[in-house]
Amino acid sequence: MNRFIASLLIAAIIPLFGACGMTGGTTARKVRLNPAITGSSLNKSVAVGMVSACPGAGVNHAIGTYNIGKFGESDVSTLRHTLELSLPNPDRTDFSVHVIVQHFALAFTNNRGANLAIVDWCVADDKGVRGSERFYAAYDTGDKLLGIETMGMAKSRVIHAIAKRIDERALAIANSLPLPPAPSLTFDDPASANHTLPTHMEAASNGLALAALQQTMLGGLSGVAEMMPSAPIPPTDWTALLVAGKAP
Image: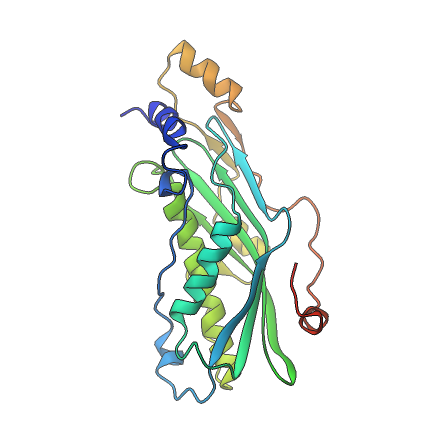
């Protein structure tokens, strides 16, 4: 099936299947944590505390296709559930882990999708914050979106990678273990994350005049994949947030 026609069909079935992977719905699952962490003697457990996204964290840049699948509250729920499923002894609360998704950008055409997330998190106990970081997660489907991978599958990959990094490192800090290496799709700095993402994307076209007109109305056949936020994101004051008992 022509990829552009497929994108039109997807738009038509959105009202019927609003939560499906084709339209950006994500799925929680238990992710496998680094054996160097789970194989250690874990005397201290970590439970999930606050998980949220800043207002406006979800940003979409649709190129020649319908603007769907923006990161939102259902995806925050997917992240929370994945964090919970993947932690050992989640009912104990020696330490708690708290997460804020600062930015989650999608750039996509009718045959490719790129994802970039910026995440702050901390681990704390009753004595205060014990560790924190900001990191980046990025994934590019390549030219296979709607072929073997949906938008929701791509977003889920990023969410699962985020949960894996946070759970592993929170457990390491809580149990005084060395920090494990960064999991796949996660990065310590923006430059490293950006290096894995496209700077320019092109939508597929069947060459028909009507299709070309529709794609022009949907943003044209090509465009810049704008992923990073337009302004710097201030650092998170975790101590103040935990004292207040809430995150944005």
